[in-house]
Image (cartoon, rainbow, N blue to C red; front, side, top):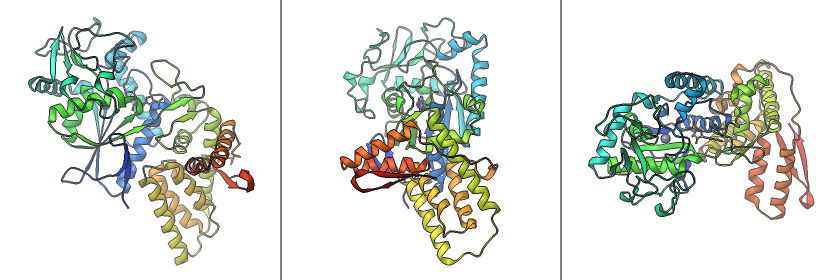
Length: 474
Ligand code: AMP
Ligand code: ZN
């Protein structure tokens, strides 16, 4: 079976074909800026990347996966504006910048572990790769892509004609800096800083000597320098959240391809945002965010949040509400209980027909994952298998163990819990109505997509005459 993924660059679903002769898939994911806790929106992106990582391996590929830790250089705007995030946090918490970085990095990995997210093969800190970044910028300057202006080194986007190719914007239309502040040192508004020496942050503690003067790197350069260092010059996959498409990833492409003189990354994957109920973006800088600890303190299993994320496709935005989380938590409890029931069931002989059925379910499960990570459909299938009256407990257990290698719902460590009824929340009712409307409009794709999302939440819809429907809760 071929693994196919949606490539933001080509806007198409494409088969994954490793580009390096050793066949190892090289994947780079933009990591956390460690000036605060990762919020559950950030964690949605890392859950998606974890599902991707495990699916790549499931499809039989070897994988080398790297992720950076941004512990220097990220300003409050992605486009070289605002304040330095790390410096602000250190001032606020009366700690050193490095104390802040390590504190939030440790918490980040505690949270990802609790969510059964595997640690990438390479975790690289920006502050430990400063010399690599300096060399990278020096080469860009030698090749004529970088210029020194009033103390800072900038990337000249006019020298890179493909600038804007990922987001489909024309360079002239990009008005970086238009909203907040303009930098008169730039030749073009889309140019960006590679190295700061004339810092507006006199209190910037982390600084390094370079031929341009003492200073610190711009935010974007770290990903290009560390990716080339750890994964070589050809990346197969690069991931991040959708907010990175327009600035950060455009800049990464420009720097890396200018440096390498050839195409750098084949496939770009972006996770859609987790939204708050009132349509607001969950953001660290705005302070309106929920952490995993908030959910744990309220009594939720971390896996309940993972379950919620899996009920929606990574390219669809997901609205967070406690009602939605309650529905996911109830479905997860029921699944844990079913798992224990199958584990404790007396063994019965298995027929070849049943073995065949298991195989067919497993293939179906893989085909959903291999089709651009269709987790809602994969979860819905889990419930179909659980409910299959003709499949013995031992085979259901086998299916669930294998499925959980990717889903990561903690089935093997399940504890007996009071089963819960999945209630029809306002969101679920709205989805049912949206599906009805889609059927009236003969929009079968939307209606099927909503049905799968509902099924993943344990809600089965049966269509009746006249666009009416009947709902069963598992
Ligand atoms: P940051 O630590 O801010 O650099 O972000 C870490 C990752 O989370 C990046 O891949 C972002 O694109 C992603 N991200 C930021 N906000 C959200 C959100 N509300 N929902 C999903 N992903 C997000
Ligand atoms: Zn990056």
